[in-house]
Image 1 (tube, one colour):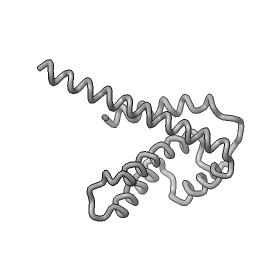
Image 2 (cartoon, rainbow, N blue to C red; image 1 turned 30 degrees about the vertical axis):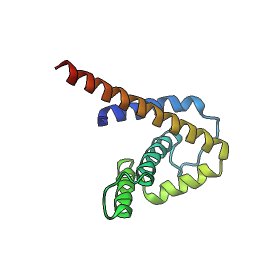
Image 3 (cartoon, rainbow, N blue to C red; image 1 turned 90 degrees about the horizontal axis):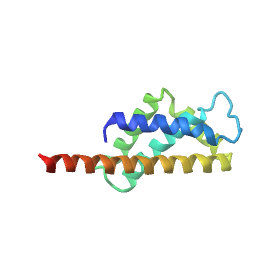
Length: 128
């Protein structure tokens, strides 16, 4: 799946997420809900790849850490701030459940887009 499609999906998820907010306001030092949702979705991807042993590298722990470092750098957030935010959201179980549900829905949508993209590519190759 192209990075552009992934980014468009993540932006769409972010726009949709605001409709589910229950009114719980996070403190300023906590990552915003929409940003945290995007990050949580990517964390699910990183962890899924790691747990499925899809990484073919002798030093999987180092590779996993580098994926997290890249995630934090892209969102311009330190690991400490992410962990502080995670703890805050975790202390609000109903909100965290909503976030996890939205992240799962986002992953399902990404999977659908990926499958459709693969199907389209296969169809194009057959037509040639």
